[in-house]
Structures are given as structure tokens and as C-alpha cells.
Length: 170
Image 1 (cartoon, rainbow, N blue to C red):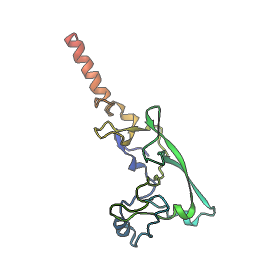
Image 2: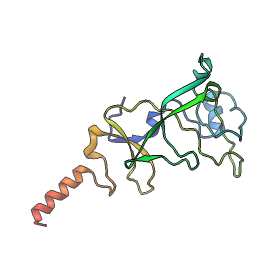
Image 3: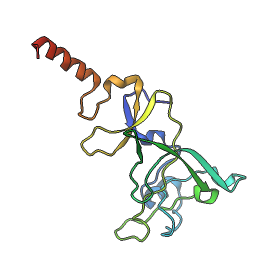
């Protein structure tokens, strides 16, 4: 279900909670996170129903497609895209959160992307117009006039500027 706003973070689409640290996991779940396995990529979420699956693998239809070497979103036609994620049910059912610190072996690789709910017909993925750039957001096309484009102006801003320019004869 799309949110009644022009744009919002991709985290609004997450199917499962994301635990940034082992401490957050322990506080929210009520038990310590499993030991970090440096031979697996970091994974900050888990699917509580995956362990009961009758299949060996769990398929998630929508995750943000990322480059597995850099973790950066894959771009097609100027926009981030979605991909399918297949995990073993054991992998899907657990987290792999590295401890806080520097130079933690295995923590310097991109995390497993979080499964997303399907986009509604009036939603699309885009990059934020923020100065930081590269931040994926969800845009609600029902509010398209309020969504800034690359230069920071909305469609409504552009229409107003055009009217002013016409009035001034420029």
C-alpha cells in the first residue's frame, strides 16, 4: 500500500525489520544474535517464517538490485531496479550481523538486500535529488508535481517559473 506522500525511503517497502547492530537485534528480539560468520555476507534481517518452509530455498520476488562487489544500486534507464533473491531457508531465517568495530573480516562486503513488498502501480524507484546523491527512494506518482527533479525543482516550481518568465517576457 503506497504512502500518502510524494516520496519516502525504500525502508517503507521492507518486508522485515532491519537490525543495524547486534545490540539493536538483542534489544528487539530478546536474544543475542548468532555469531558473525565472516565467510557469509552481512545480513541485517531475517524471515521468521523461512525455517518452517517445506522447500530448501526461499524466493523473494523484490529486492533492490545491487552490484555484489560494491553494493551500489544497479541502474537501468536512469533508475534503480528490482531483482529476485533466492536464499536457502536456513540463510533466510537468520541474521549475520558483524560486531561493531573496524577491520572486522567479512564485514567489508555488501549486505544481503532486504526483501521488499511489491511496488504499487503509483510507485516507482528513483534516486533522491538530495546533494548526497545515490540514495534510493520511492516516489508516489500521484504526487508527481511535488517530487523534485535532478535540479531540485518540482514540476509545480517549473510551471511557476515558466509563468513568471512569460509575464516578464524572458
